[in-house]
View 1 (cartoon, rainbow, N blue to C red):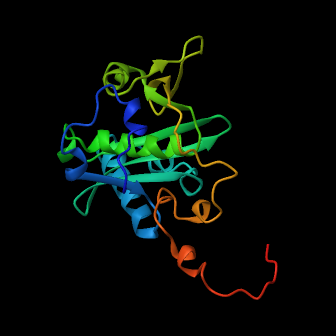
View 2 (cartoon, helix red, strand yellow; view 1 turned 180 degrees about the vertical axis):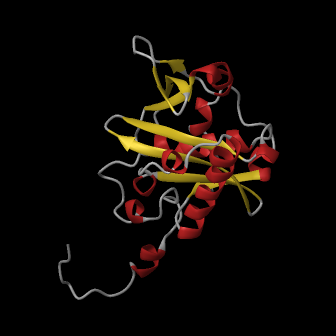
Length: 209
């Protein structure tokens, strides 16, 4: 996206490495093609690599979620899904293609994703992680395991809940934000959109809902 994800970066255990945003970029899926890219990556990672059943991977939540895609140049190489709840965002389906693991792709994807989460005013994110992977995620995020909750399992794995605190964004999108700003494409709130270009047209004075 167009600005450095300075708030989103704060959820990472270590800052983005130099040059990370030159090598990789991430943005929300806004078109059918973007959406198909996210679904294709998940099919490669979860269905092909992990033998996840189709109906478990595509669980009925995709059309109601925000999908972020990370690119190496124009090549889509990773994705994450975000769903929105009262008081928290839930991050899910984090996946990076094998050839790009160990590169800054994951960190760029996470920083840009959490920049959007913070910009929307959320101060907390929840992730359900395979319990065996907690040491890995603990090295990636400034996060904590949710205590006092019973364990749970599905798809043949034991899971744990992980909370990720999110810093307050200085430019939160509030109900009093500029009307044109909040109708711009998701994640592109600081760039004039198509309706900005039409704002200068003469009006007939009619009130429209």
